[in-house]
Image 1: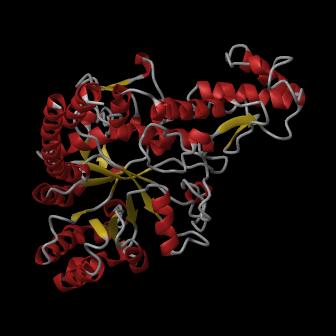
Image 2: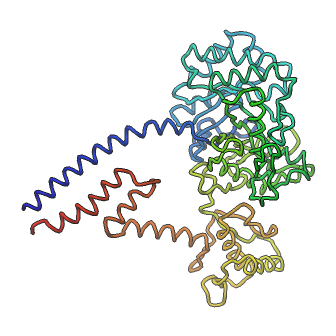
Image 3: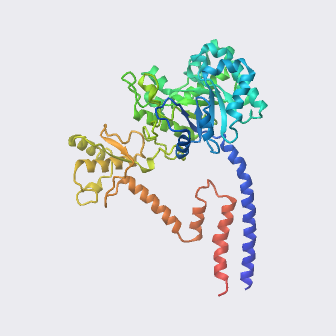
Length: 523
């Protein structure tokens, strides 16, 4: 009985400590939640030149399904803002260019706009920014003199409503306001715009607002073919010899977007502004175009956007500012099929207007953003209608140089039947695709393969993608049934980067105290 009293008192002591640690932990987590708002993110632009656009409520449901947490609107649509209420989706609303003159000419009009489009919805709807116009300096230069007055008037209205620390104001700019962008260290703002750019930057610095830039490596590549390699524009891995090097700073650039962002930072530095962050309000790649734009393909669009998302979530910053990663809004959520020619204008979207995916993003490992990334449930199979000779050549490559695991399609093995080249090629293609980590371009085989979300496994023939899923399931099941307190502790602490104080208390309780109680308890 003495042992029991001793260990019960020890158990009580550890439970008290655990309670204190839990309460301390919950208090300590609140600043972290606030910090998450300042972490780099990937959002999406939502244009509305779409036939059969989803209703606002269906649109919001779709955003939530896709785990999209940040959006930018090109106006301040009241129905969408209402539908966003009580969600965690953050939204940047916009002042259309055609409203700029009225707001820039009248403080009363600016105050009315803020009251109607911000105060009426905040904080139920998480409006985090106002984009004043869009590429005003380059598309509507006649309105440019009123740009900063409009921004100042809107800011004053926010101050009057005590929302100026919650809602940031800026204006999206085209990359063309920066001249001589490469090497980045030589970049500078178009001097003919200095009377507007300098006051704008001073406002952004004073209010802690970002410089909004629309940056498209696609156009840089198209305008500099033969100078800028496609791989640099698509974020593809490069050998050191293919990296772009700034001769003045000796900084190495592995992709075009980082160079464009640093060009903006150097341009600001030339005007003695060093405390304004760059927010990329638009970036993307078209998936379809006419013959004049041969690089607007689904594969290139998939590669660019997938790699861009990974790049942001890697939080590696830029060569000039590795400590600072710019957030990016993808252009865009839907194909705007009502846009005027050229064809590419209607084909920048991740989804069609009916919400089906234009292509499957490959962003596994980048959190839960964009659930249309179904790469954890995708397979690579042979396309229908391909002649047997072409398929056989692709199959031979997959099982030979491609090093696919083709054991299961040999005579007597589980996937030998049905014994035809299409079935065997599908298995070999999927083996290669899975081994390559489902990377963009790994399910092509010169155009005879396609990605599917339907598991092609049949009977005892289990495709490699299914094997991986079943192995993961098996590991989880084994972990959940593992015996021993140490194994249970591993499961509890799985998501932690390092052992917390709570984990150590649990460890001592389960591994030291619990067995002792069992051992010394009287029968």
